[in-house]
Structures are given as C-alpha cells and as structure tokens.
Amino acid sequence: MLPLLLLTVAASTVRLVPFFPDRKFPAKGGEAVVEFSGVDPKIAFNEVVPSWNVSPATGAALEVQIRSHGDGFTSKWYSFGTWTLDDAARRTSVKGQKDDDGNVDTDTFLPKKGASTVDVRVTLKNNGDGLPKLRLFTLSFANTHHPAASEKSPSPAWGKTIEVPQRAQGNYPNGGVLCSPTSLSMVLTHYAKQLQRPEMDRDVPEVEACVWDKSYDGAGNWPFNAAYAGSFPGMRSYVTRFRSIADLEQWIDAGLPVICSISLNIAKGEAQDGGSGHLVVLVGFTKDGDPVFNDPARRAQVRYTYKRENFERAWLHSSRTVYLVYPETAKVPVDGDGVWIER
Image (cartoon, rainbow, N blue to C red):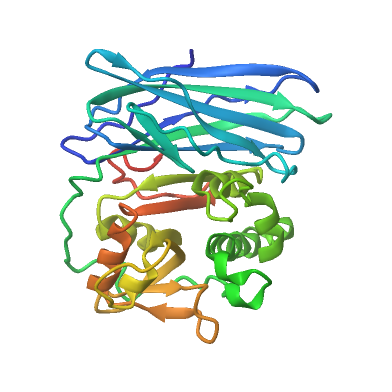
C-alpha cells in the first residue's frame, strides 16, 4: 500500500486526496496492482471522482476499481472501466453496476449514505514495448448535498483575461458532443505556445479520438479527459471540485485557465437545465467580476461573458467540477486548502 498525502481543511464539503505513486508499469504482457486502502477524506461525501496521469502512455492500460466502507458495511468493488490512450476499442466505462451500496455513473462513484472511507485498486497492464509510469493518482470527494455558500467581493482577477486560443466544437464532425475535447484542445494549445511544445497543439478530432468512451458513447468522461492531458510529460491534469467562484479567481489571477463543467441552459439565464452538462474554458473576469469564457458551443463568438449569478447556478449543476490542466512547473495558487495540489 502506498502512503497518501492528505491535504487538510476544516469544515469543507470538498476534498482532494492526491497520491504520487511514481510506479512503473510491468514489462510488455505483464500486470501489476497498486492499492490505496482506507482513504479517509475527513469529510462526509456522496461522490468520488478519480483521475490519473500516465506517461509515456503508449501501450498502457489501466482499470480503476473502488469500494466503500461505513458503519457495519463494506461494498463490493465497482469499476470505472478500462482506460487506454491509444486503443479506442478498449477504452470504456462500465454500465449496470448499481446495487444497494452504490454505483459508478460513468465517471463518478456514488456510495450509499454513511460511507466514510474507500479502498482503490488500480490494475496496470502494458501492451507495448515502453515502460509507462503512473505519475499521479487523485480522488476528488464531494458532499453535493451541502455545497459551500457563494460569495462576491473584489478580486485581483477582475479585469484580467488570459489569451487562450479559441475553437468552436461546431466546426468539427459530430461537434454537438465535443465540448470537452474542444475545451481541452484550447488549453493544451495555449500551453503548447507558452512552453514552445508544438506536440501539445492537438486539434479537436485528435483529442476526441483519445478520450472517447465506448460505453458512454461520448467524449465527456471526466477522468478520460484528464488522463489525456496528463499523458504529456511535464503536464499535470486532474478533476476536482472547487468551493466557490473565489477559487476560480485565484487561478485566473495566477494566469492559469480552468475548464469548468456547467449547465449551458442555466448559464444562458434559463430557470432549469434542459440537457447534458457542458464544458467551457474560464479565461478571465470583467472589471465588474463577471466570468469570461472560451465557450466551444458559441460558433460565431467563442469568447463570451456570462452573468456571474447565472454562471454560479450553472456551475453548481456539476457541484462546481473543474479540470485543472497545467505544467508541473507552474506556480499554482497557495490557498488550496485541500481542493487542489499545491506542490
């Protein structure tokens, strides 16, 4: 069992537990298991989302399984499916696992009420000639029944905008379901230019091919998207939940764009959500505190500002889920309080 690094925070409804296994995959044809046992986030939780970074990822395959413990019960093992970077036929989540103790809904573990700790089992397989390495593994815990209160106060991020390249999902085949790979493509291209790493400038179809979930029949599997961005050496990528828009302001003030999961209908000002979730890239704030996005759904005008109150309601639809994608050398905000990795 590997030691865990627990980021502590008091009275929180979200918590990120990161591990840095630095574990090599077995040689070609081999199989190995990494276990994280008795993971206690020190908060009540009803959702858990994993993320992992593997590089070099060619030939690598892994399966993540999870089970929960509570007062007098231990659940069965539930699977997040099989992930590979380069074998779309094998990359898939798993349906039909729901029972009285919990479920995995594509990319999110939903334990039954009263779960207090989890065990995780990661099976590593190598189908190639290289030696992939599991560099990072994270678990994002959330109590979605009691989200933190919203807030608004002037921030140094107000009036700042990061010049992230703009791309519209509607410009590509199957564009209606490509908000996540389009958002990821924009952020990776931003860092490709900033770091002078042209191999990271990947157009939307290339990203789509590497994140598509066969069972889900879509490109919006959160961990699969994070794993793709994290497969580039020197990049860090994971899914987490933020406490409030103030966390987003810290990241923009640090010059780091953030991919946010929202309800598009609610962001537009409608009273209720009318469809599946939507991914957008937060690139800044107006001088009055309204968030500025690269919204891949807006074909004619990708750069768009939503009203702050509408965005906050829309973002709460996903329990304030974000993809954090950035270079390992980046200076991230220091006030993470257990919500993001500060090292």
